[in-house]
Image 1 (tube, helix red, strand yellow):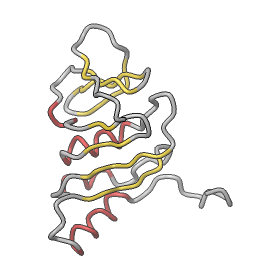
Image 2 (cartoon, one colour):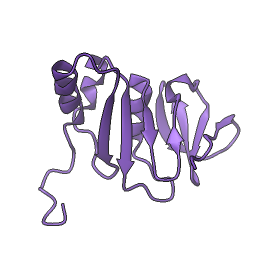
Image 3 (tube, helix red, strand yellow):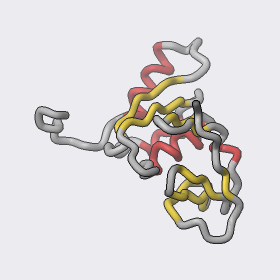
Image 4 (cartoon, helix red, strand yellow):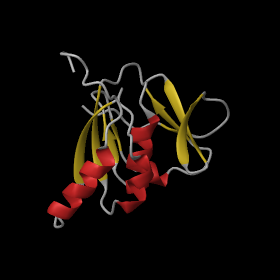
Length: 130
């Protein structure tokens, strides 16, 4: 990336995860190391995944998390891991509930996370990891 960026920013993360599931069927979950600033090009394939995805998300500043990775973890019953905190059980949040990451808020709307403000709902604030 430091030598030109490679041209195409979105990544085929789901295709890679599907290939890994096929190659390692005995694995209980998958780990994805992802660039927060690169969108997931093939998010429409997420329903084909059968294992939880643990996402180590790089490049997150001030709680600005790419919601595509929150939604990938939510839909696969996985987790998101940041430098400051680990986000587990995202799939258990109900419609309208808020997730706080740093100074940012993300609300569950129609089953997916969207960036929002903190007005008027229960907030899920995961404990920071030490």
